[in-house]
Length: 272
Ligand SMILES: [Mg+2]
Ligand SMILES: [Zn+2]
Image 1 (cartoon, rainbow, N blue to C red):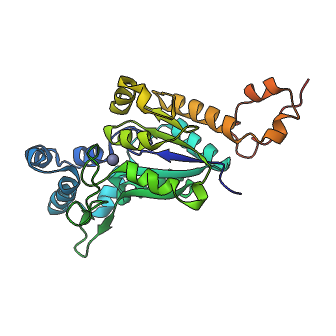
Image 2: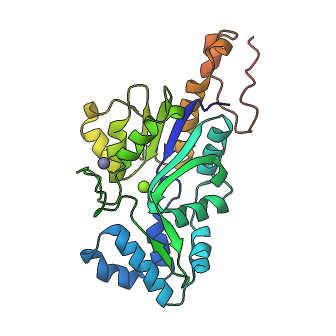
Image 3: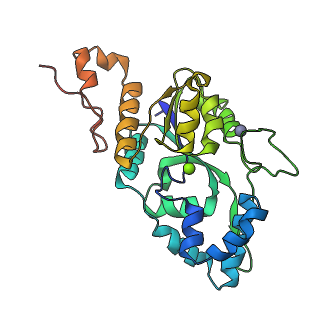
């Protein structure tokens, strides 16, 4: 089944409740080194360095994996991801965390297979067993040239790449995020697209400070429950095939929320 629409998720503070980098640094005891080096280093090299710090402290990649498995994730967000995927949406992650962290968390919660792509900073465990994190765009060899974004990643460039793919042609996009780095991709969204910023977080502040700059429709959320409700309302609205709508009273479409049970969504209520 061809995807009806593309749903793009940020990861930190959107899919998971915390920032995954801060979670690992705090829980595994690298806070002192982090605070000492933060003023002198940009984020991705700093996180790579923190992984070196943990390695020196005798923490293995498996310890980091265990730590990530304990990071809290709202059950509503898991349910929203499962349902949107079951309804035929093409789900993607665009994140400034890293592949090791994201894959570990999504796999642990059984939702890795819901996503067709994870766009993030590459990560690998080297021959010493140390986790290495490298930038998505190498600022030295391939600078992205966007002044809104950190040097290692322009999420707007990633959205433009996805928009240009055959499978995304003429599809509506829904973008869900919280951070400053989610603003550039929000500006790339087109008419008929939607952005779901987390209320009172940097993305929401940037959007609300000048709404005219966005072509996408804005739907704010502030809890996992809200994220699920709003996302599934939008999905339900966008994927309802017009042929089915004409078979029932039009008002039924509005009062036909997406069922949380996978597979039941196609069953429209019998009109009275
Ligand atoms: Mg975030
Ligand atoms: Zn950018």
